[in-house]
Length: 122
Image (cartoon, rainbow, N blue to C red; front, side, top):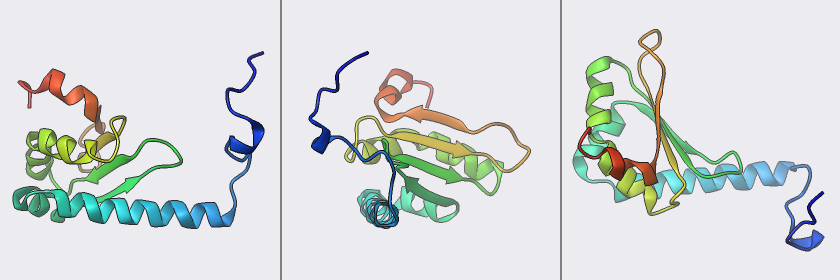
């Protein structure tokens, strides 16, 4: 069994409280607002056509975008480099999950630090 690197006082709590949940939601809302404001106008218009949010679930941020139709889905996928560039400002381990309309396939998910490997594909 491995001994924790940090002293017990510096370790995260074993259970979360209501205050933890409130703080997490406030962090997500603030991060979402700052992310949106950092995007260029075209990306803002694309995001406004979708339902989207940033979640942390006490881990790296995940930008979740739910697209209303396939043309919007493909436009978002085409803009993935721009989205990743803006999101990476908040965390190198952040992810982007783009969801097509229901019954049109599985969500596409990529870490922002992987986007450069696929730049020619986008």
